[in-house]
Image (cartoon, rainbow, N blue to C red; front, side):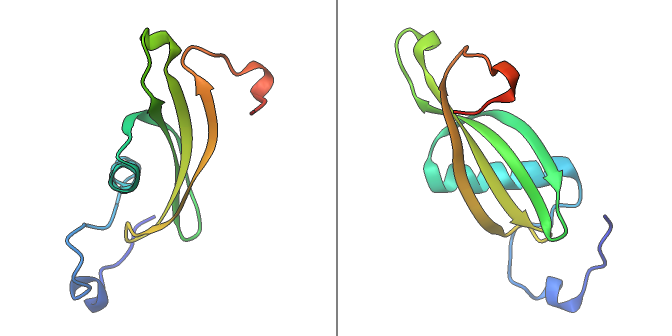
Length: 107
């Protein structure tokens, strides 16, 4: 999805470069989520291009427990536009570390 740079892009005042690759889009989405939630990111679990940008699913540590096998993790869905601006984010699921996703069902 190549995009031409316009004078609006150059003068937008944003210090964030536009995400040109999936890896850059994921990094931008993670940065937005960390800035908003201050949660520790475990990793990116999926991403998909949309007409207007990217939807990135990020796994985060919601609640640290002892032992760590009792930690509570969560999946967040982060939407960014083609310029890397945050459009929306939402928590879609919480679960215990090590739990399995049987049949793809979400709780």
